[in-house]
Length: 43
Length: 580
Image (cartoon, rainbow over all chains, first blue to last red):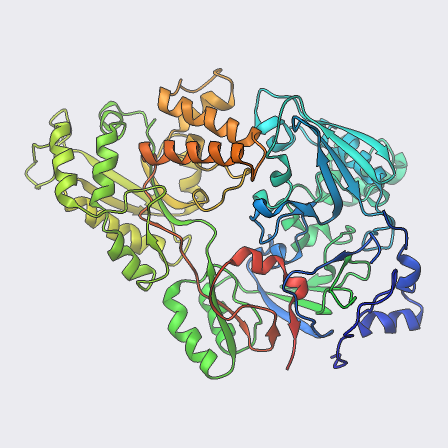
């Protein structure tokens, strides 16, 4: 169970917080880092 | 934020990550709570139905219509991904439309709303791919309600327009390797040549409901959670790592990591396991009779009880005006009879008994709110029904005994006892009325075959100013043969009388008008007036509420009575979080 409080401030473009569950998967190499999965182009 | 993401900014609170939500699964064939909680429409109006506030992007980034609302240009979010990490692009639209919806083997009858104003005489839309993230949906006439059709109507999601081509091509004869496809068909015991049956067993159709069943395991999704395993009466879901929504602080949703569904078909068991805190959410099919027990558990710190608006006329009594019996028809088709039976219904007694006196009001939009047995008796006498038989009940116009039979099943805890009460109300003004309770599936089939005189369910009309629900039309059950006539363009069935013809025309005008505009509001008002003037069905109460609850640890759910629709609260399940 995650007990960390959520971030209070919005993140910069293209970045965002993720569940510790996903962070662990990224660390274990079973999930690509979300930043790479998230484009930054705007309309 | 990037345009991949949808930032939720209305009234959200910042939650906490983690945990497993445990819910009862209603049946092996799916679950309504998780299905709505997972559902993602292409576009969305605030509060689900506030079209006056605009219909905005959801899965899609944005949309626009041409001047006469016949062509809709859809803008996708660049860089959005399916739950397996593959990109979502207009190639998925091209596949969904040209290879699935328009493939007559896979889709013999595309959903009706894909024709202009759901008109059987209109052509199915065409779809034009503009670029990797833009497509147009083109109809043969004005279809102003189309955006609401793909917002919330029928709980439709995104899947008529977006299908994971990279996954589904392996089951499609035009793309799959022939040997590989033959092997897959053999493995699933599908007859040679019927590859489309394999495809249909793998694809998710109009209703995302299917995502809560075993059969679609492995199908990539755009929903907050993804099924990871199932068996032995349980289903497990993990968060979708590519989900497109973030909260205002930039936290990717959902907050809850896992969902565990446990098959629990008995409604009383569901209530008991909610009361003990074993399950996290009761769902929407609970009777108000449970409220005292729920409140006690809330006082004990186990539950959070809330009482949202229900999304329908909760109980609807219907007479089939095209039933094949001359005497029955002559009486039921006389408007004075339907007025009389409205006056005969004691709305307040129904509200006091089944809605605890306060969670519904006497129907004013689709019924006569006044209870007046004298008026009922006067109208029945005026019709020529004054003669009584030996049993004290009114004889028919032909001097023979006359009886109304309502058929229903235990579709809620209240349907059978409430029908017993209405039968007493009608008997009190001399109309012999009985209840025949049975298996509702069988009743539905006989109703569709025009073999039922009267039946009881619920109805969506009145509180949903939304296109896409058309259960106020006669094919729902109050004029089966008129419905057949309309749906077949006059080939079968029976030509409807002018008032019913007018209802069909108003229905089409409502669907053609841009929703949320004065033109749309005016056609909806005309539709309501036709229903109110003709009292096609019997609706003693409107504006009902129902009790539900979550375990106390689930946050971002309302407390107490709320005017929010229960369904909309469920739609925001990705914002629920666990704090204990």
